[in-house]
Amino acid sequence: MPERSRIVKGDLDTVSDDALVEHAYLVSRGVRPLALAGYTSSGDWEMTRATTRLERLASPGAIAFVIPRDDGLADCGYGACRWAIDLYGWALVSRRDAMPARYRHRIVGLLLGYSPMAIRDFEEANGG
Image (cartoon, rainbow, N blue to C red):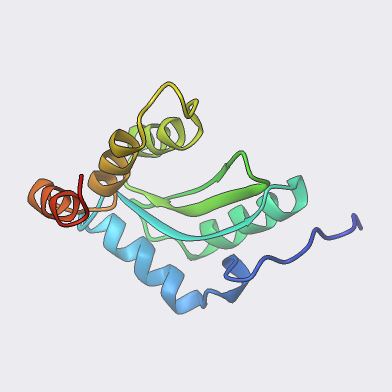
């Protein structure tokens, strides 16, 4: 068996099956287009293991995903449709100088189910 990469505090291993089922349920019912459930190391073994667990607990209509980031970790969760997962992945890994952080945060906020007014209020309260 391949050597397991270091476990990162707060990784998907610390999230209960009940919490994952709830994330999948809310996505499948249209409450939000995307739910981030946690993260794991971006090694092949860890990402396969995370995908298997997420798929096992998914509700019909919730698509499990594991998307590697550029920091050695991979975000894990559920999406309502492939385009929402693709948009999140694009925003996550697009070149930092190609997209200002405020746009990245707005895209992710909308995908996670925050209203445009909530995002506006957050930006105004935090100086833009």
